[in-house]
Amino acid sequence: MKNYKMYESSDKMISLIADNYNILQSLGRFGINLGFGDKTVQEVCEHENVDTYTFLAIVNFSINGHRDIDDASRFSIPTLLHYLEASHEYFLNFQLPAIREGLVHALDSNDNLARLIIKLYDEYAHEIRLHMEYEEKTVFPYVNGMLNNNVVESYDVETFSKHHEQITLKLKELKNIIIKYLPSDIKRNNQLTTTLYNIYNNEEWLQNHAMVEDYIFLPAIRLLEHKYKQDDITTNISKMINQGADSSEILSDREKDVIISLVQGMTNKEIADHLFISINTVITHRRNIARKLQIHSPAGLTIYAIVNNLVDISSVKL
Image 1 (tube, rainbow, N blue to C red):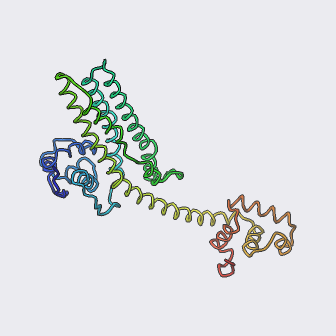
Image 2 (cartoon, one colour; image 1 turned 90 degrees about the horizontal axis):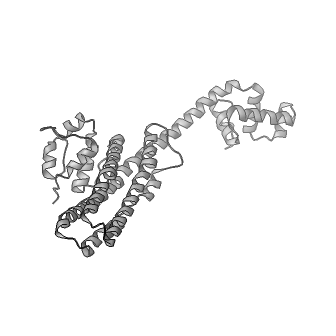
């Protein structure tokens, strides 16, 4: 039965566990060790270098189903990544193997139906592993890239959102087959019942894990992605302006004259007549300008000329 109290940073950590022991799993995912005495949630989190707001958001969501996130911008992305990565480690390397071992001990290896059940479970485990490995190899590095200003431009969080789906069909089949059709003797029945109970628990855990990603992780990453792209645009504009100012010094006076003429809309022939040079010389100047500035379009040269005060914006036909 759920306790619908909203936990706060001033609550004692041991009180949270007393209300709902499922919080113990969350503690492990955050890297919080036991032995914290009567410390409050905030005191424990600060001692373990865990963001308190993020911890409480996940706990209140996981335990009490609280989905009204006050401010997704307050989430600590490193804390979220640590939680999700530790969850994967726990599920892939402990829970999945433990359930399989329980099935093997509970089932008769000489029974064809038992072997089919193991096979069905292995297919389910393989799908879960592929799903989580995708996140570890693609999603988490993408997020870390944004945190370190080294993002993969060809990827975005919506790609992850579309890829992200719960894999539960095979697990439901497995539970139903065990309950409806699998005979077991008294010696194996306790082991089988325990394993089935663990399968139910892990199905619930996996659904909760997916919802944490949907309702907490994804909104936080969308905000990070938006901020990164806005910062990236600002940085690129700044680079362009600064680079343009520096580059103006390496242009010859004649190359500047060519840029001014181009901005005013002149053709190569008109520029040649205006500057008393040949058309081939104009073309050569244009090539040198493009090479030096790495700007090839008339619009780009217009921006360059305005930024570097080669022309007045009022004289430019926009």
